[in-house]
Length: 157
View 1 (cartoon, rainbow, N blue to C red):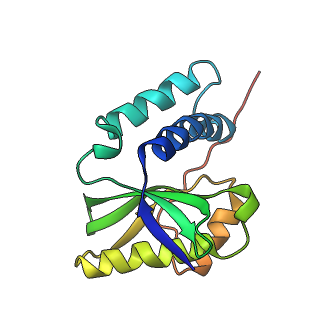
View 2 (view 1 turned 120 degrees about the vertical axis):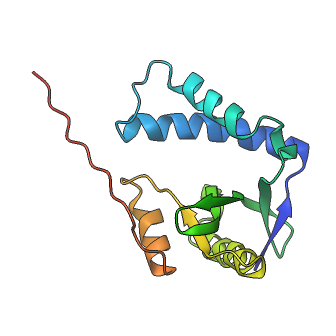
């Protein structure tokens, strides 16, 4: 089992640095951004979403901690108004590579879903990169449905 505990400052700083770089790389690999300037764009997105860091109102930045007290992953979510109603939107959910395939992500999703229910929200939403087959499979198995699929075919001369 895991607990979703508030991130401390040291964990937040390490998470943010790694996640800014990972997000930039994912955007490059998905074909959304050119490599040049991607990290700066990623940093700008994070600065806009988290202007006060982990103290940004409404944003939940959590550490996934297992029963042994080990930090095994992270989750970032926030209540947002969407066309279907108020949801908890997951901006990031990740399990450290050494702790993957142990059910921690599924448990974190269940915790987030319970928070949404407890606060009277209509659901939980997230975006996933199309080439992340493992994450897509996890979300589908957890009962999420694909509501939009954006596709790109590159053509060059």
